[in-house]
Image (cartoon, rainbow, N blue to C red; front, side, top):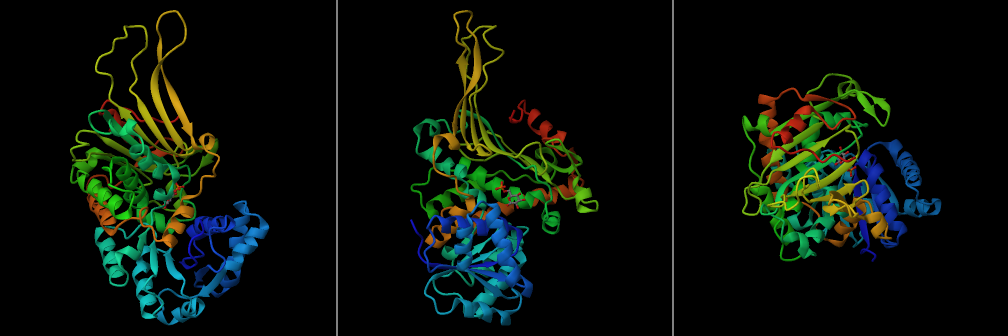
Length: 481
Ligand code: BG6
């Protein structure tokens, strides 16, 4: 279904995110006929040479994404370049002029560092560019701690209401993440056992093989906790553990998510050392290729973490006593993201010795990438008329084989949701602040207790301490084969 006609203004249009994700997502939607003819994408750049250079870069990027040449041309016709310095109010006249008197809904995507969020919103307001329906989209990370996040949220709230502020976390746009709610609330099978009664523990892994890429300036200041845990991992945890909202509607879903975040037991002081592990990759091998260590890539020594593992618990009726192990890092063995739910063992085994080594617990694997889908591990009898033999086997439901439809990129979904005015898959300010409130004491604790991250070899599953974190509880990480 086409979205209503719109003007989408992208600040930071020449940046990595815009080029890699935003323009391809928009071009894809355009190709599918979702963006009406009269809609426009306005790309804000600061340097004169980008006015001509950026469309060329965008075209090249779109071709790399497999968009046919005629569609690249069609998309470029939608594009208006705007020369503006985000920090200079007097330069906003160019944007005002480009937008003209159009009645279309205006959305402003701030794909910039968070310290530009306040000046951009203030300058948009001063230049009277915002209309009563305008929306602002804020990229993560929103600030670098609770105090700065509050400051941004307060300042933005003075200009735009919460109902027109879209805080993006692209993990919420991933198909499998949205499917978490469907899996739980459109089936009776799992929901009945979705609690400490039947679940032993949960693991959430988001592993990447990429390293610093071209983002040293940002990443070395932020670190992996701010880049991945405060947002993506916390959102996955929240949607996994959420109580049933009474309907699929932004307010109802977001209220329930906030409750989960509030139930997260704080990890403070010496507990930081006990329940968290931070690591940094050294040199190693990925896919048979030697790769440099983080400090080598960066060009100097650094105490920034590229890996985080946390054992956390939710203090709630449903989840009391169920550990949730988080693990995420750069330059790990495989690109692999998954939620693994391990159910409790059968209370009593009727199968005697020799039928199996042990009765493995049932496990539900919710795979985000690659091969997104759902697998359920069950114990099965090996066919044959000899002695009874029992082994674990998987029920395997992959998106690629279960559906003919293309799996859209997360940004395709989220960008059109903004234009449609649907906030369900965006974060409320309270969620972001609550997540910072939980993360801040851990980052502070690291300064006191583990100022130097543990080393791990690139291409491994992280530092040995992260393995110790789960093995101490008599459990182990469910690494892919
Ligand atoms: C971004 C982080 O939000 O997510 C990056 O800033 C990370 O560091 C990326 O690489 C991972 O996203 P995806 O969709 O590739 O899992």
